[in-house]
Structure formats: structure tokens, C-alpha cells
Amino acid sequence: MLALVMTVFLAGSVSAQYPTRQITVVIQAAPGGVSDITARTVASLVEKELGVPVIAVNRPGAAGALAMSYLSRQAPDGYTFGYVPVELSMVRTLGYGDVGPDNLDLLAQAVSVPAAVTVRADSPWTTLQDLIDYAKANPGKIRVGNAGPGSIWHIAAGALERATGVRFTHVPFDGASPAVASLLGGHIEMVTVSPTEILPALQAGEVRVLAVMDRERSPVIPDVPTLAEVGVPGVVVSGWGGFAAPKGIPADVRAKLADAIAKAIQSPEFAEMAASRGMTVAYKPGEEFAAFAQEQYEMFAELIPALGIVQ
Image (cartoon, rainbow, N blue to C red):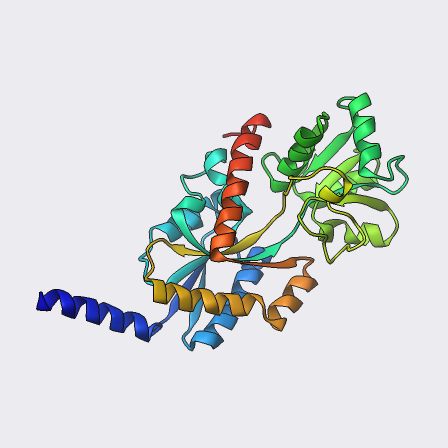
């Protein structure tokens, strides 16, 4: 009995002292990309808040499945957390790895980058309803560029297609930039990409954005309505990202780590970084983030097979 009491006491003492050593943040992307910069910005701010080094480790591959699977297998002691992108809700259905929102303890959502439904400025469609009406009358005539089969922007176009009962012709490109270039060249009629990726063309008056596929308007293009505002509710497809840890972290350790991450996400430094890269700061606490990620998982589990892109 005494041994049991001592064990509990010592465990509590260790938790109360947390952190006492270096923390590692696992990043699912290669250095230099938006995910990497987002995670490293938070890591540097968490380091200041907790007073211990926070070291970034990049483990790219399999649409993030490698890093997220690795994260799920680490000790639940608060000394390892990771950046988790929208692919957390996709990779199991895509067949890239057996990992999803249920495998991790989600700590906070950080950012959101919605899909922007975009056409050329000289197109006949000035509203989303104009586009839908044409697409219904002309099945397959609207060619939609995407960043590659199974990309979040491909899935965004598919979600819009299913929600409105239209049929597009999906045209894959090797990334969003070539898709936008093809739109400007008149080779396709529409793209669903991030606001940042079409902002130069929008500022030049070359494109028109009909809607963003998020719950809230994008601060990058605040005059553009959401899908719900133009009569297509319940369709949210964005390149969101947040932070998670292995399941089973002691409650007091989790609370301290989650609080440090929350402060980082809501800091002026993070807001400046996000705005400079066209991202919306979209903080959600762990429980709310977990519910959202599960909603997204269920949507993708239905949508991805319907698009015929399961591996």
C-alpha cells in the first residue's frame, strides 16, 4: 500500500514539475513549407512560454501519415507533440496509413486555408448560382483544375459537385500554380485553390472568386461570401492545421502544454505570420478541434471513395 502511495506521489510530482527537459514537435512536411513555418512559429513561442527548448523534427511522406503514425506511437508524457494537417482526416480513407483523429489527443486547431471557387473575370458567371445553373444544364462542360488526384483542392471541387448535384470534368495538375495558370490561359473554366494562390490574379482583375468553402469569410478576400451565404450550407473544405499529442498524457501535463500552444496561436507574432501567408488564424481548443476533425473524417470517408481516388 505504501509503495502504491509513493508511486502516485512521485508521478504527481513529476507532472507538477513539467517540463524539465527538451520537447520535440514532429512536423509532417519538409522544411520551408507553410506547415513547417506554422509549426516552427508555434514551437518558438511555446519554448518561451515553458522555458525549455522545443526542437522541430521533420518526417515528411505519405500525405503526413508517416509523421502522424510516428507521433501516435510516442510516449504520452508531454515531451512530444506534432503538427497535424487536414490530411489527419483523410489518410486512412486514402489508404496511406491507419491513423485518424481517434489515434491522437488533439490539443488545438491553429489555422484554416479555405478553398476558393474561382473563375476567370471574363466568364459569364458572376455568382455561384450562375455557375451551378450552367453546370446543371451542361454536365461535364465545366473543366475544374486541381492540384493533383486526391489533393485537398480536388476533394474540394468534388464536395461542391456532390452538394449541388452538378458534374464537373476534373483536370489534374502538378500543383495549384499550374492549375491557376491554365485557368488564366483559358484551358479550363474553374479552379478550387487557396485564396493566396489566386490573390495576384485577383488583384490584377483576371479572376473572380464566387465563394469560399469555409464557415467564415477569408480575411485575405473578405468581400467573398461563404458557400452557406450563397445557399450551399454544410460544405467545409479547407487546408486546416493544428496540434496533437499521443493519447494518454496526464491531465495536468496536457493542460499546461495545451495552454502554451493556445497562447502561441493567439499571439500577435503568430497572427502576423499567418496573415503574411494568406492563412486564417482559426483557434479551437482540443475538444472542439477533435469534434471538427471527426466531422471532416466522416465527410472524407464518404467523399473520397465517391471520387474514385482511394489507393
